[in-house]
Amino acid sequence: MMQIETVLDILKNDHNYRQINHPEGFFYNWQGVAFDNLSYDSRDADAKTLFFAKGSSFKAEFLEQAISKGLSWYISEIDYEVGIPAILVNDIKQAMSLIAMAFYDNPQEKLQLLAFTGTKGKTTAAYFAYHILKQSHQPAMLSTMNTTLDGKTFFKSRLTTPESLDLFKMMAEAVSNGMTHLIMEVSSQAYLVKRVYGLTFDVGVFLNISPDHIGPIEHPTFEDYFYHKRQLMVNSKATIVNSGMDHFQVVKEEVEKLPHDFYGQNSDNTIENSSAFSFDAKGKLAGHYDMQLIGDFNQENALAAGLACLRLGASLEDIQKGIAQTSVPGRMEVLTQTNGAKVFVDYAHNGDSLTKLLDVVSQHQKGQMTLILGAPGNKGESRRADFGHVINQYPDLDIILTADDPNFEDPQTISEEIASYIHRPVQIIIDREKAIETAMRQSKTENDAVIIAGKGADAYQIVEGKHAKYPGDLLVAKSFL
Image 1: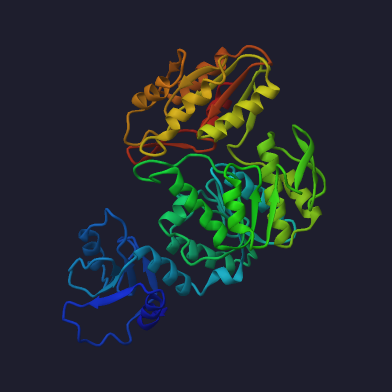
Image 2: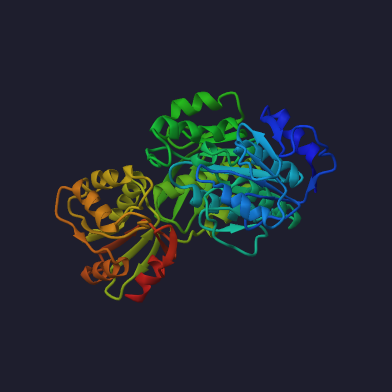
């Protein structure tokens, strides 16, 4: 339970409080008001709820629905004049985060927090860290792919980084379950819309940066995207940074006064003598490492996770065991057809990750390669041109363009836009299952490969704002083996 005095103190200390608007005027007694629930969803509100009116599309009717269930107080940037008191603030997202933190008794202070950011690799690195830390500790994990708050049950998150009310509630649940560490993926959006406002991480890891998430409803420019990625560095007690990443010098200057480790190119912590499923490391993690995931980039993700976990109490033995045990749903999963041809299912969903995926597959498969690819609707629109530019670098690659979470756009139009950037004919098969079947039937020998990119382990298609039924790329591919 939280007293209203505590709410007001939090807002005032953050210089975020404006005033209370009360339908009966400014002179009234609100002492003794208390809340035992926080919510931004009108379906989850009652007389003891403190409600947050957030979002550019928020409507007064949502408040009215909550009032019909007994709601008597809300926080907002504007007064909707619905007959109950409004606590007015300058920034509703800042208010949500700090109030949630206090309401759930500061669970962030009872966990060691590890966060990963980067254009790609966050989920894979988080999985490496989870398997490393579970050797000797009790880690919880918030991941795009799977979330666990007890180390036993897993569920898929709706957002890469949850809204602050949900985040601190989940943290509190992890604490009550006896968890010692929390591993998170922290997106640029999390900082843009202040989902982690006021939160300090024990270790923050910056994996890489390339243009992505630039569009009308995301970041207006690459500079804005990169700036919000770097916010994890300035909100972490210690940092791990890929010295081979683009714009490394900018990040290096930002972390120089913090405890830090660099890994990769031109650093003390590097990989040598690597093969498809193992590598040797030198530096702080010196030793031999076996792993299930192929690709140089996955070896770098393992190195980053290992360095981060070393700072959080993991031993070198824990790190070796954890890396060897790690597999990730939808990340470089490989099937073999009866004719020996390989099928690769991977989440690669932007130009840079697609390049790395194609490079890895081409190292192992020397026959005909067919790529199945789409692009989501209403987000990351710059990816469409990026895909075309990448595909043009692989002139012998067969292309089938298909649906990939078209949302409110026409998947045919999206596919035609991607095709407009490709300098050779392509197939367009909008039905994703039919596209996968077609590609698999075209592969003939053990040297051939079918590459299904974009959705990874997602067992749905986003169509008109809703999750439409779809078995998932791996199950579809298995059905055609």
